[in-house]
Length: 410
Image 1: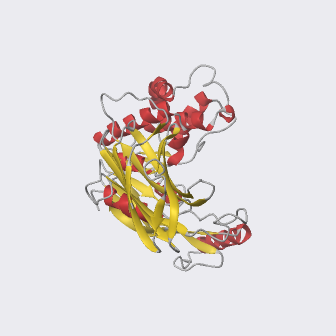
Image 2: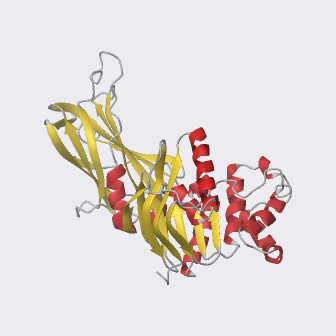
Image 3: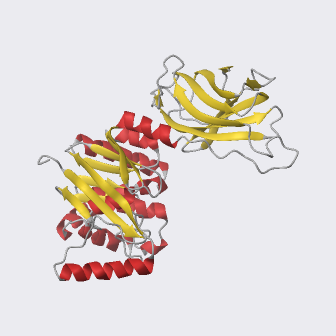
């Protein structure tokens, strides 16, 4: 591990759910440290839980790591451990070089001071000297896009997006060897996110090391060459990005709760007879799941449906949404199968061939619905995987609603 820029060995961190009990434990632990008595860090006391549990990994120059997991998985706690904000109860962390971090909106800023003053405070926290800050001040301001009266206003008047602009700009101008970024970039506008993405790509080409937390999987796929999937503080996957995303996608693509509390004459008043169990995106030829498509590439979906009994007169509806503008297109089985689909009792896989998709390059998500013939009752809603369409030189970036043409094989 000597060549590693980031080395994490068997790191664990526990917290206490109760405030009063947590304060008591803190006093006890400090007293033990002062007396030279080592507490049993391996054991959980009442109301304690592991925020991070027995985590190990290493990163070298030029490598980038994406942290996956739902809220409360331990991702932000791990970033705080790496940044030295909190120390682990068990294990060791070694970080080489200067660290730039953007972990929380507003972290390192004094709300009563101006943006100009906070540049110097935040830069000093990141290890920059006043001479460095004087030399880079104009570049920091230029990248952030904040100037004039905005820069001289107290940051308590800033929006969350303005906080992120200033914080990220300071963090990258400290010339970090390791950059830690939580999902705070999601609050920035699209133009600023593009500028940040371009800088991160350049940073990695210069052999910088990045650790990124994001719930938006296409961002992880485009930026990171390794991923860690965390759940309840534990590492469930550590390895290359594409297989890691596939494992994570399969795990989180769980069906939404079936609707069961509507009017008494509704066919789903006593519980939905249909549930979707999976959605897989393919090119229509290979059985392998695909998370990124070329513009104009054939596009197909495989939708798994479980029927509690024989069902007929059912329609499938698909809605595709772009991250920037929301819903942009859709498809329904009503166009080609007005009589509806039939499902025998048990598991069925629907094959939906949408042909050559014409989606503008960008990042998308898909949501599927099952309804009756008149769309008076929705049997089930299922949030499918996120996917991306690669940039294309001749594609005009315009959005609008359109209905996709396609066929379904049930």
